[in-house]
Amino acid sequence: MDYNPKDEAFDEIVICKDILNDIENISENVHNAWAREKFSNGWKYGDTVNTVLKTHPSLIPYEKLSEEQKELDRTTSKQVIKSLIKLGYKISR
Image (cartoon, helix red, strand yellow):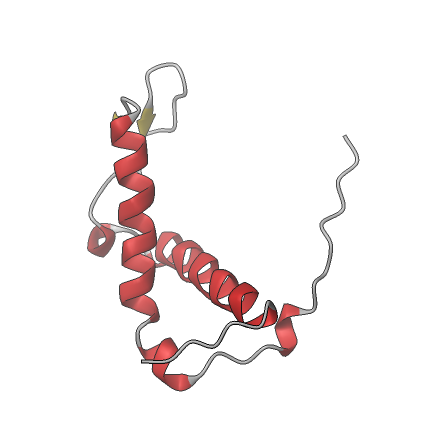
């Protein structure tokens, strides 16, 4: 498979400080949504990812995730926000 992800120049997009202050709450919601989807499909906590047994070590509360795992959710959250901004949406409180 030959896959080369497009560079959409998201690095130039700046997320305002107010949203960045809430990025941890947004990231926790991203994790919880992912976990709910996994649980609804029969997955459960396990020490390793096993697609046959449907186990995953990240099926734990957000606050118990490692910093590395939390950073994955933060990155996802920021990329979604940047995508919305690039598409012309305005985000305000």
